[in-house]
Image (cartoon, rainbow, N blue to C red; front, side, top):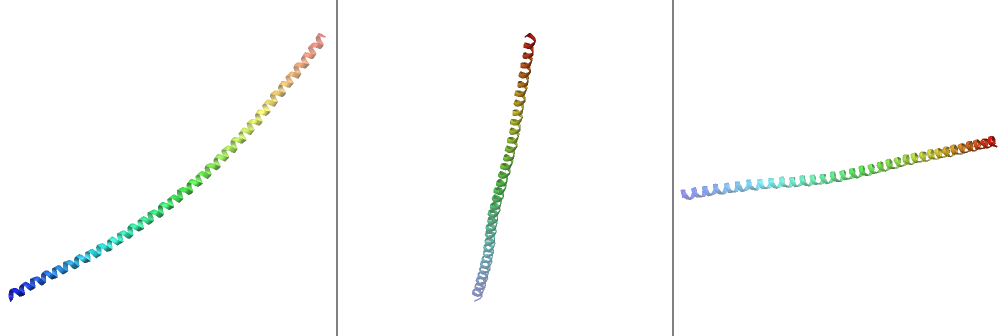
Amino acid sequence: METLSFTFGILTMVAIIIVVVAVIGVVKVVKQQAQLEQLQKDIEWIGNRFDNERRDLETLINNVETSTDGRFDQIERHISEIADNINQRIDKENEQIYRNIRDTHSYIDSRIDKLEAKKQLIKG
């Protein structure tokens, strides 16, 4: 009987140890699952945050690009207006110069004509 009691005692101890180990294993698995779920939530949150930041950055880049394009268009128009004004002033100055040249030629011709008229009077 002693051996039987001893054997049952040993078997009971082994069973208790197996149950304790199984419970510890189940607890660890549950904790690991909880950590895994939390990590998955964190990864999802980071992914959403990354997508939001990317969208915000794209919007910002598009706004800057639109603003820059608008400014370049304004600068181009302003430069074009300045160039047009300069060309108009150059054209006016050229017209004035040609008018002065024509007036000078006309004056010189009239003086030459008067000189020829005096010359013929003297010869005449």
